[in-house]
Length: 114
Image 1 (cartoon, rainbow, N blue to C red):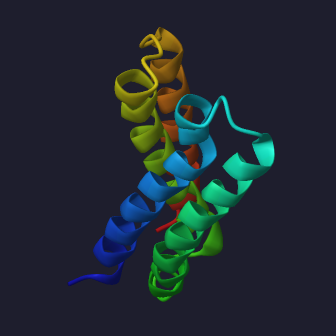
Image 2: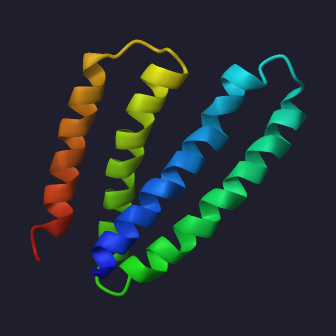
């Protein structure tokens, strides 16, 4: 399998864990002290790093750091929107579309030389 596809797959998994680590405590642990939420989030974040580090190492064999970062940002928004709407029950806003369009511009500029 191509390193870019492996890297993207691992980054998707990493971002699912990252999104839960960063935001799930707002729903699940909102009545607990923040320190408990922090420790739970750190535990989830460890799982994130177990996928993120190999994803970046594999991706770096064929991509620049800037390209990896932009791919990660696109994946982050792609994971965050469904999480926000379905898990946190936030309203789906048109602003997500505008943010996505801006990221498409960022992708263009990072990859236009290749």
